[in-house]
Structure formats: structure tokens, C-alpha cells
Amino acid sequence: MKQIFRLLLTVTITFITTIPSTTGQNTLKSKSNPLERPKLVVGIVVDQMRYDYLYRYYDKYQEGGFKRLINDGFNCRNNHYHYALTVTAAGHSAVYTGALPAVNGIVGNDWYDKAQSEKVYCTDDKTVATVGSSNVTVGKMSPRNLLVSTVTDQLRIATNFRSKTIGVAIKDRASILPAGHAASGAYWFDSKTGNFVTSTYYAEALPNWVKAYNDKKMPAEYLRKGWNTLLPIDQYTQSSVDDAPWEGTISGEPKAVFPHELIGTAGDAFGVMTTSPWGNTMTKDMAIAAIKGENMGKGKDTDFLAVSFSTPDRIGHTFGPNSVEQEDNYIKLDREFADLFNFLDSWTGKGNYTVFLTADHGAMDVPAYWQQNKLPAGLMNPTAITRTIVKSLHDAFGEGEYIQAFENYQLYLNDPLLKKKNISVDDVYQVLRQVLLPIQGIADVLNLKSIGTAPLNNYQLDLYKNNIHAKRSGDIQVIVQPGWFASSYGTGTDHGTPYNYDTHVPFLLYGWGINKGETLERTTIADIAPTISALLHILPPSGNVGNPVEAALKK
Image (cartoon, rainbow, N blue to C red):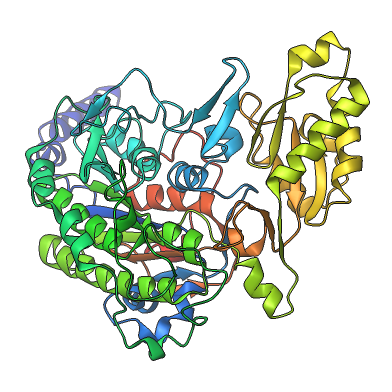
């Protein structure tokens, strides 16, 4: 019996081992399907675009620009900033890092470095030099002050640095911070010479395609053309009268009325051009030149263009959100977007690229405009506030320079002097709160060193906490009332507050991998980077705190 069993077992084993291993052979011979991704991602940030601009001028938009994103893409209609101090550098950083200023370190356009006893600009880098201009200061820039990675960095890492990532904008910070640390290149505008430039952080010389664009001398051509409205001026029904008293003027003009003659000034020959819709035209053309020049979207790996339109911010600061100038700007910007999207259709093929659009912050209406219409708003005199602060501290503690800097409505205290005089931050805070609260336009004053016990509502408290970086933030925070800001001019607008007009900005997605639809669920700027990361199947940025907008992404 045992012999028979052994014989059967031997035959069975022999039979099994002689069967051809087709599974292994097929595995070796088969080709795995590559991971599907878009050929190109284009991230668009519009500087100072409030959410309502999507619909305020909707009837004047064409079908191929904003309407294409709104009607054929996915619209996060309740999208907000997740921190309090809404400014350009912080906004662009938050979009591309998915992080908080408290984490990514970009707490403002500028801040004060107590260790070095100097003011720091967000992209300052004294170790690099200008490339592409005789203006030696314009190119001393890099992303070294950004403390975390960006979604563009993560794409480079995920593809073993085969993907190309490029930043383009008029403002240096709007090009450098989105492009990230590992960027293939970043280019910004030098208003002194009219050239797009970069720094030795990226390259020792401009690429030929940038040189070719600069050689066209388009800024000089735009200056000659001036700025007139696209439509008859009586059709600008979403704006105040053209000659409103709260509008500022651009250089060389006696009044803020159309047509605008664009006149450069000594040392800033082309700056005035960027405060007109020609700045958008130039940015769009430069973005297309970058795609063509770098052959983006034509390789095996996804490429990423980060482009920011800085001109709306400059127009808003000068003329205000209710001006004919801003309405004309957005009507023309819509046409620029249509041109860009039509180019992308022909370049990569429609449906082969992904676009997202957002803004770095919104803006308050001009206070004088609100006052005329019996709405609560106003301006604070920054000089008067500074004098009040200095006098109150001298009266309380004796002579001395107690304040080292005033940035982002934050006071940076002189720590060595306080230590010498045995004065605590809370001592200073108690004095300042008492003298500042009675000032019209100031809502509250916070001690940022003990913000956990601040007598502030939970919503705003979280926004201010999200802004605090231990090494870069100030000691005392002044909170302005809704509708108020500090200004010495009385014309134009500003931003930088935790209120709805500053925090509520667009977030639209369109193209490859994107569903058609919308949501009214609250999303934040921190959700943009992880949404794009999920789309590309890559790791989110190192400081990310957001979540993908699942409803926007195709399964």
C-alpha cells in the first residue's frame, strides 16, 4: 500500500513540474501600462481676484475664458483662505504648498528678522545675481525663505526630475514661490529695462526663448498704445463713474479717466504698463513662449507651468474694485484666458491638460465708496497710530526704541531693551491695548506670545494662529475692523485681513481628470496642492495640511 502511494505521488509531482509555466513567461513578456496623467498642468493665480468677479462681469465674458472654467470645469464656490494676513507672497505659497504660513514660513511679503536686526523680503537672496538685465538688484531672488516643498517640487521628485516646472509672472514672488525649490526655471519682469529676468539660482544665462521674447520689445509697444476701454464706456454698468474721487492716478496723469496715457518714469520706464491690461497680455504671451520654448507637455512625463497675473492687483490698489478700470481689466483678462486655452487645445490636444485657477487674496472696496453709500468703512492714519504707540510706551516705561518694526499689522518689540528694563511682552501689550482700542478702525489687539488665551472668537483665533511663525512673526497683532485699513492716501484699495472680501477667492479646475460640476462645501486654499497631488498620484508637499477635493476628481 505504501509503495502504491509513493508511486502515485511521484507521478503527480512529475506531471505538475512538467507543465509549462505560462504565467511567468507572460509576465516577463508583457508590457505594463503606464500611469495615466495629464501632459501638462497649468496653475493660474490671479492677483487680487475676489470670488465675485467670476459673476460680476459674467455677462461680458466670452465663452472660451472664465466661462469655460465655470461651465465645463469644477467650481469650488465656497473657497477661502485659512489664515488671517492675506497678501501676495503668503497666498502664492499657500496655494502651492498646501501649508499654513505658520508652517511654510512665508508670513507676509516682508517680515522682520530679529536675529539679524533687518527687514526681510520674502524672496531676497544676496547669494545670487541677476540674469538678463543690467539691473543688479532685480534678480537677487530665490525661494530659499520658503521652508517646505511645493506641489511642483513633488512632481519633479516623483518623476526623478524629468518633469519640467516653470514659473512666470510680473512679480518676482509670484513666479519664484510657486515654481518651487527644484524648478526648471522662474522668470519675472524688470520694469526698469522691460526684460523678463531670472537669477543665478536657476541658470547662468537666459534660455534662447526668453531672449527672443525680450528682443521683441513689447513693453515699449504697449506704452505707445496707451490704455482705452474695450467697449463703449457707457456699457461699463458694473462700475462707478469713471472720474470717482476715490480713484488714484497712474504716473504722469492729472486725473483717473480714460483714455490713459502710459508714461514711464525715470528708473521705472515700464512699471506703468503693468498697471494696465497690457500686463496681462505680456504675461500670457510669456507663458505661451515658455511652453513652446521648453517643449512642455510633449514628453512622457507631466510638466507644470505656474503662471500668475499680477496686473489686477496693481489696478485694484490704484483704482479700486468698483472702477471702470478694473471692469475693463477683467473683460480683457477673459479674452487672454480664451487665447491661452485655445493655444493649449492645439498644443497638447484638448482634454490632455489640466488647469486650475485661484487667487492669492481678495480686496476690500474703497472705503470712501462705501461711506458714500452709507456702509461702515474707513481709513486709519498709520502715522498717527505710530505716534500713539511710541508716546504711550515712552509714558509707561521711559525713553527708548521699544518697537523695531511694524509689518503686517504686527509690532516687533525690542527684546534686548525690554530685558534690560525688566519689561515683559505682556506689560507692553496691556499698555498698547488700552491706547489702541479706542481708535476708530481698530477691532482688537492680541499678544501673539500668549495667543492661546486671547479673548477672541474661535473663528478668527484659528486664522491668526495659522499665521504665527515663531521666528518670523511679531509680538503684538493689531486687528482692524471690517471695512477698514491703514492708508496715507485715501484712494484705491488694500487687503491683508481675515474678512470675507479678502479670504473668499475662486478655485476652479478644468480638463484632464476633472469632473464637471460645483460644490458649496467649504474648501480652503490648502486643498489645492493636495488635489493636484492626488490627480497626479504623487506625494503632497512636505508641509501640506489640506485635503483633496474628492468631488472634483474623476475616479
